[in-house]
Image (cartoon, rainbow, N blue to C red):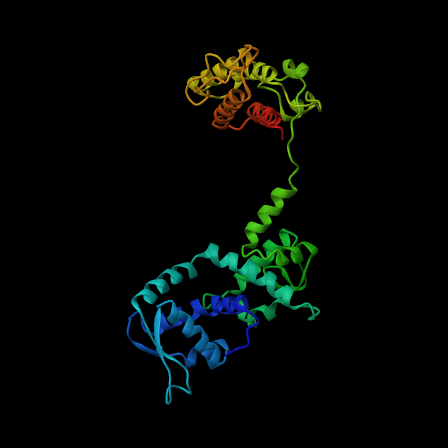
Length: 341
């Protein structure tokens, strides 16, 4: 049995070799459950000892995907296995996954990045070494040279690695090294580098915060460009409910909403402005208890929140324009103020 540091180490080992062995057995058995297959050849093809093969076989057996036996005369103790019906079905699904170009690309991206991180002592580090490593296999099948090159090109574009020196394939350099961002990607522990990159890109995107001064409302029209809208906005606190209602009434007619949604939005704005009575119908209003303050001075906090959330839902269904985003920001800030955030 190979020496595993902990259960996580064993799980990673089985995750790497389990699908390979199952697909290999499925191929050797020609998809037929019950046909005996010796695993000695698998160990030799993967350059792993019989004890490691046996560990993977035991894991697949525990999942009821294969049955196994071993003993004298069975290829120096290498397990002899038979495929179960559940194993054949799992193998068919894995085969489809192995043929999926998107999944292969994601695997290549992660495998290349982690291989570079695991070999800091080799300078210069030549990507050709990756082709001879266990990491080049995806569910038992090696990645092609062009697949590796595409992964390299993506990692370079996202500034996770550098590729220099003599060409490896399609103009991609063969000497590879991690950037600081590449190290962070590996240390994040993410199993999907593409998703990690997208997440980091979103975090780096400047947050859009719109603080509106009531006096600027007259300068905002549907035809304004984003640049002009920003120039007419000052850094101020969020609008009060009555000010928000006025802004909605000013800009709603210019939004690309269907007539029913526009009418509901205007009814909600009117209800917010006059005290919550006669609330908007449809999705725009909250037709429950009004929650008005006892002195008639305006809708209570619960009613205000209901009206604002209805407005936000209606605006969310409108096409993405500067005016729509402007109003969504205004409603969001007013809600934040109302909720004390």
